[in-house]
Amino acid sequence: MELNELAAKVEAGDRRALARAITLVESRRTDHRADAAALLDTLGTTRQALRIGLSGTPGVGKSSFIEAFGTMLTGQGLKVAVLAVDPSSARSGGSILGDKTRMERLSRNPNAFIRPSPSQTHLGGVARRTREAVALCEAAGFDVVLIETVGVGQSETVVAEMSDLFILLLAPAGGDELQGVKRGIMEMADLILVNKADGALKDTATRTCADYAGALRLLRKRAQDPEGFPKALCVSAAEETGLDTAWAEMQELAGWRRANGHFAVRRAEQARHWFEEEVRQGLLARLTSDPVARARMDDLGRAVAEGKAAPVQAAAEMLRGLQNARE
Image (cartoon, rainbow, N blue to C red; front, side, top):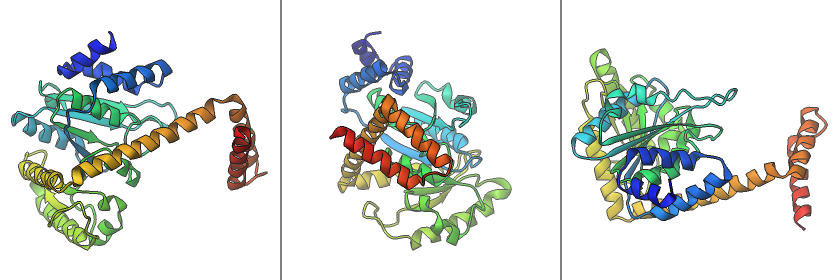
């Protein structure tokens, strides 16, 4: 399929074309990277969706929440895209990619699109090309893009660099106020949702929510937040309660940021961040692809492993060698 034809189908909302386009931008092949850049340039940035990053530890119910939340949004006439990132095995490189199975009801919804992707070797809870996949979903006319991280720890705050709102999903009895303040990820969250607020856990969830609300009040106020934000709320994906309130809070926060200029400024900062990240990754790729530099890296790495050189000294020597080669 020609790139212009693929771009036209993506803009028309063809889900099969969108899936193919995401596969193209995720490819590491040099020719595919050139095609992906051309495709993104053709599509442009005229369409924008509300980008919502969702983080939380494994077992907190991220997939259940997304299915219930996404179903509610599509019921309101919105088109919802879900970009779910699964952790890749450090040994085999494989991923389960089972999000469509866990979100069976949402995956059958004509106004929803679910795309699982492997994190591969990229840290931060997202795949390296997730941001480009977000741009493709926006071009396809989706109103809301949910970015589900792998849920591996504090490093996944990288998702905050590609989302307009960052939602932290927690389980009941997940920690007291002091623990909440200690967590770096708390400082990134725009909204904390305590899931599983139903049945025997309802009272526990209410107490946990109160604990985190107290912790949020102790954090330094951010310029991009109106009065009362960030907030902690109780939700239940199983009973589908609290979802409409959470969505109303998200809309209020996004609307305030748009009206006060924070929304556009944040997106501009994110674009610059990913430009610099792409430069860093490109330089690293060039370094590892150059046979002379690769051989030098192997020699110095062997010396470090054998205790003949300190890591810092070996790195400094490697960088000196690169500088001398350029001169």
